[in-house]
Amino acid sequence: MPLFTIDSDRCSRDGICVKECPSRVILTNSPKDVPAPTPDAEENCIKCGHCVAVCPESALKLMWISPDECPTVDPELQLDPDRAEQFLASRRSIRTFRKKPVPRETLLKLVKVACQAPSAKNEQPWHWLVVENPEEVKRLAGLVIDWVKLIIEERPKVALQMKLPRVLEAWESGDERICRGAPHVIVVHGRKDWPFGSEDGALALSHLDLYAASLGLGTCWAGYLYTAANNHPPLSGALGLPPEHRAYGAMMVGYPTFKYQRIPVRNPPRVTWM
Image (cartoon, rainbow, N blue to C red):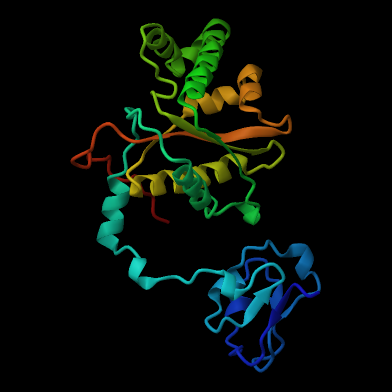
């Protein structure tokens, strides 16, 4: 079966699919010809779906996806520039959470939207761990503290750079600064041998982070947990990460206790023009 088929009656021979294919596995010999796969198409196609998504005539169908399966882009739902700017600028890292749990359906929707993020070569390398139980979040935070103690003892300079003594002091006084009392944590993980795991994880979690804000949820990157997960076997074991996987990132999720009223001023951009 060919990589894709094209409805010759619908195809307008505009060549858009040829120009938009990132792997250059679609060709046409003349403006009158219907596009066709290159001889190495199946080997080099990254399955991004751009050809199906961009075709204005819905003429191209891939082996695994057809135009009818793809939601259409609704212009009415597009953000205008002012709304988009305020939405992005008003996003805050939340570190005080209500005890109210987030429904599983909502957590799943966060992950589904996160999976729309770009990834290197369209690898989509993500595996997801959603910690639903707040008590389990607390237990995991305790395992991170065990790692904190080891770093303070074995690598004191690194511990100072990461402000780990303050984190430990806060923990011992009842102030949990690992997961900040969030009811949920979402960990994205994948193969250790995938060279773009950190970048792909950050892209996916950024999608999750921004979408969460639209649902009235608060998020914060769980940097201590993510770092410890890759350096402290008891924690990676508690998370159930496969031996061939590493954590790509982690995020706290919950309902924020407070509502922010204004947007803090940021440093001006440092730009070099070439």
